[in-house]
Amino acid sequence: MARVAPTQRRRATAAWWLAAGLAAAVLIAVGVQSHLKQQRDIQAGMEARREVMQALRVTNQKFDLAVRTVHEAPGV
Amino acid sequence: MSIFRKAAAAPLLAVAVTAAATSLGAGTLAPGSGTASGAASPVVTVPSAQLVLPDFSALAAKAADSVNITLDGSLLHLAAGFLNSKDPEDAATLEAIKGLQGIYVRSFTFDTDAAYREADIDGVRRQLSAPGWTRLIQTRSRKTHADVDIYMMTVNGKALGLALIASEARQFTIVNIVGAIDLDKLRKLEGQFGVPKLDLSSQKSSGP
Image 1 (tube, rainbow over the protein chains, first blue to last red):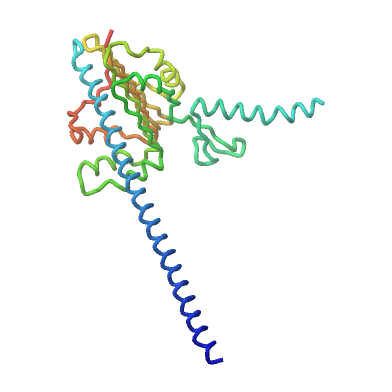
Image 2: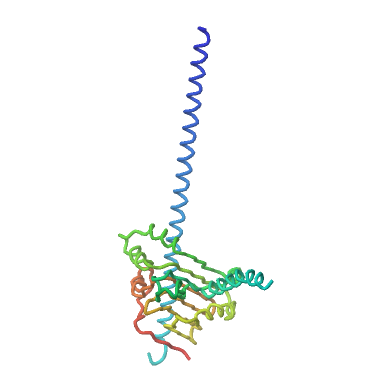
């Protein structure tokens, strides 16, 4: 009986460490996943911002082209 | 037998009508939110300013430079979150895209003249002859061979979108902006992108 108690204690300690390790691994995985998603969202947002700027730039360039042509037309 | 035929044909007809409405760029509004109301018309169809842009992949392969931008409402919303309202350029951009549901740009630059055919753009031009679209500006330059057409879709005096087709010797550009566009806001962007001030107040047309 005296030999069983330390063995059970060791097993309980090992189980506790195993559970703690698993919990830590899950937390790290969730954290990394969240960080990667955040990075992807930032990249997508920055790309969308760049595209908006470029789209408006192209639009304004063509507006400018139209207005220049109007001003170059004879009698204007 | 004929009942079965009718029953089978009904969904096909519905699909065909939906497909036609989609190809024409039509949208629907719930009762009360559209231009008409009443129990007799449960769904009001209003024209959509979104054009069906052709697949220009063949031209993109030939082009020296190409711009292909497709920004729907969710992407515009996402982009707005990354614009700093304290920065003057960003603030003007924020104002310009407020109320927009989409921005679509196709622009191709070629190394040689006549690398594209007018027929490539005809499909888009045909859509702009639909009711609701009005040509604001049409310019034809013999000197630079630059033709620009700017169309605005208005329903009940409200601007629902803008389309721009610019064809030059070595470049053509199609811009389609969907939503409550405000030209004044767009004009505020002039200078922000190194583009000189424009005079859009006079809706003139030049050319032959």
